[in-house]
Length: 302
Image 1 (cartoon, rainbow, N blue to C red):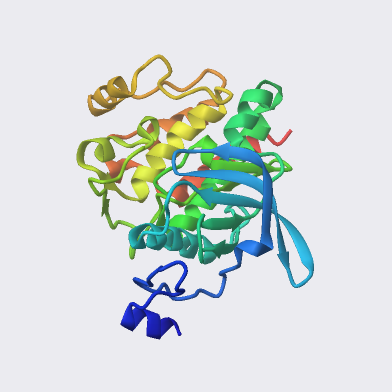
Image 2: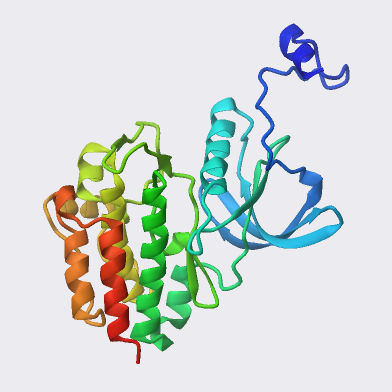
């Protein structure tokens, strides 16, 4: 039936007059919209909104985070982008990376079903509870994110949007989420050049080479991780606070880096300075960073 309508361009129904322009192969993790219910808004961005919801499958119910894409998402390019995000998350299984349960793509709106973490985003938690958290607890947040990002890089993924707002928390465990900007690479030093059409970029977290030349690598993720460290130890403050986006662009290009907060342990300050090296090759890998953060955590065990 699908092949018939795709070939002949006959309307799918006489009433609608709708014509099948192209077919997207069905994936094993596709679910039906009718299996999903959602209500409470958890967060919202330019391209999507995330709700608390329920997924029903074989008579069982699972509480999930429902990522609903805004506007018209039926264009081929948009559908492929959403499926690409789903494929990336689908193959990643790690304690510090969010899980994907399924995707509903047969009609509007396109929906991703994600693991629900009850304590919400890391940036919100830092704003509301950061002043009550110990240095040790904050260090373990940093270690969780380093472990997750190391795993992504080892599995050929550049995240491209590492920040506290894109990390989720449950029972003091942090998981990396939001892969809509992520790209797959074949080797660790491979570069991805940003398309001109890409908008709403996280300027305050971008590496200087990305701002200057639109280039992303695993080392640009490392730079963003350095900014995230600053967020953790300033209780979720906005990076480069007091500067406009235009001023951030100029200053980062010229070599300015946000200074380490006094609350950050000295050894972590040194690690952050390495993350902020202008030359990407001088920045440590996420494996080296994870190992060093582990050692710093041990110093604060008690």
